[in-house]
Length: 204
Ligand SMILES: *[C@@H]1O[C@H](CO)[C@@H](O)[C@H](O)[C@H]1NC(C)=O
Ligand SMILES: *[C@@H]1O[C@H](CO)[C@@H](O)[C@H](O)[C@H]1NC(C)=O
Image (tube, rainbow, N blue to C red; front, side, top):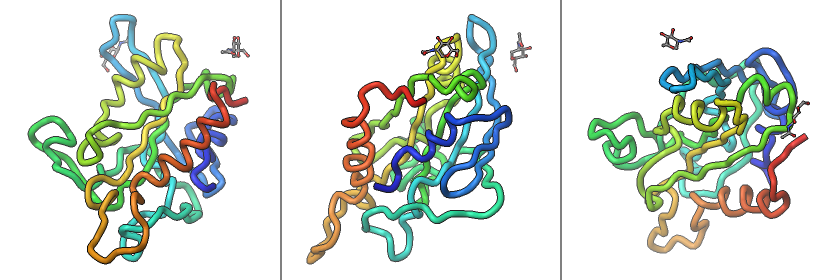
């Protein structure tokens, strides 16, 4: 299965920099400091917008996800990508909105120097809520994740990701005998099998 934890494998593997090599290419994240903690600023290393499938656009709209295409050079993974197609004001929960796009299938990894060095931190994979029509991993406040999970000596690696919503994830078109539930395909099949295989997420 593609979209196995190739991201984690690589990120948990080494380094003193914020650059890591995945099976598909190199990504460069950045450090991020949560400054509101009563216990002092907590610093993590984040990788935003890591492609875990080929973007589901064009001919791939309404289709099951395909493995990501490899890239040359260094892919900047420093900012969130757009949320999946949805009501922006509700997805971002701010009444104002934020970017949404069909090109939204990216994962985000929140870790720190300790976990990169010791390679033995627990990993928490989060699946955002929103009744399959709204919300997004791209709407989580990174500082809250850094402070509450990665920081304070907790050293929990957090992985979030977007999945296709509404019509774009669950559409059953009139006369369509092709893929269904494609938005959740990756979730159930790929992430699901990973959970069954390992109950503790302690990657070494
Ligand atoms: C914490 O972060 C804030 C905002 O970036 C900064 O002003 C403050 O100096 C930092 N505190 C420490 C102890 O580094
Ligand atoms: C991770 O490794 C460090 C040093 O190698 C060790 O001190 C720590 O107890 C380990 N943590 C876990 C959760 O295994």
